[in-house]
Length: 73
Image 1 (tube, rainbow, N blue to C red):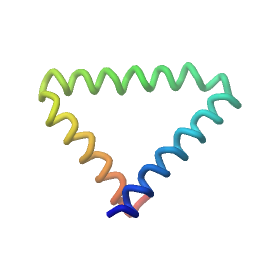
Image 2 (tube, rainbow, N blue to C red; image 1 turned 60 degrees about the vertical axis):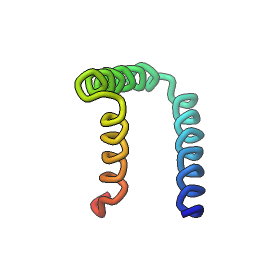
Image 3 (tube, rainbow, N blue to C red; image 1 turned 30 degrees about the vertical axis):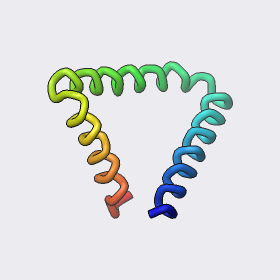
């Protein structure tokens, strides 16, 4: 369990570092990134209004588990 949590934290850290490097190296990607963030925030707010806070968080966790356990990727 501790190994899983440590791997998760290191994966998030690596994702953040690689993302910041990509955004620094390719400044033309920044508007696309801002647009994607806007769409994700809109979906989150719609889910928050429709279902509430706890089901929205559980839905996000379920989506991450679904993509993380998929053997196709």
